[in-house]
Amino acid sequence: MSSAADRGASDEAGRTLAQKIEHLFVTTTPNDQKPPSHDDVATAINIAAGERAISGTYIWQLRTGRKTNPTKKHLEALARYFGVSPAYFLDDAETQRIDEQLALLQALKQNDVRTIALRAHGLSVSSRQTLAGVVSHLRKLEGLGEDPGLRNGDA
Image 1 (cartoon, rainbow, N blue to C red):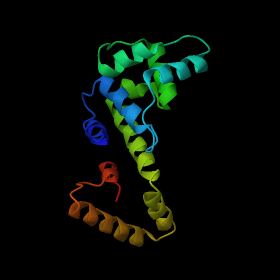
Image 2: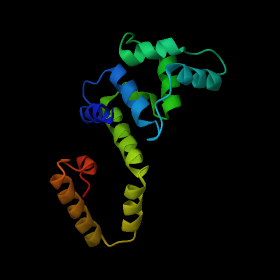
Image 3: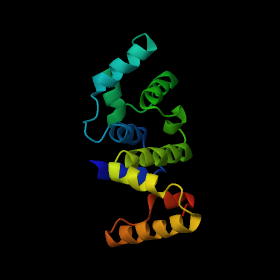
Image 4: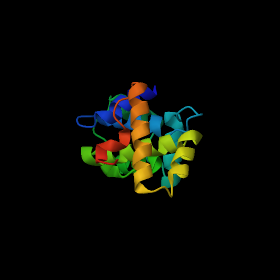
């Protein structure tokens, strides 16, 4: 399931609204839980709005691509629920920026990744660059390809 999400995140240009919504369902769900149901999302949105703003069926239709032209109000409600800017759905550059932040948050949810990041804090620039080189080498050995953080020119 996450491999499809990873493919979607790496191919930002031309992603459909349905693909973006699917990516949010997958990446914003804690690792040890299944994504919320469409009705759960609709209920949370409606409670937050204080009115019936959206239905679970309509969210399902958007997520599966059966509906492709939501109102501004619906996009804003979905964005608020998932904790992203409404521009996530409309601007590919913003989608990529937010997806990179979501990927970082997902990585930091893993205790070992968080521990490595915290232990690197306070190291000299030279030591951090050495550590980054070791991580890049390990990624190549394991067939993982480019470091996700290097897309922004980080090293």
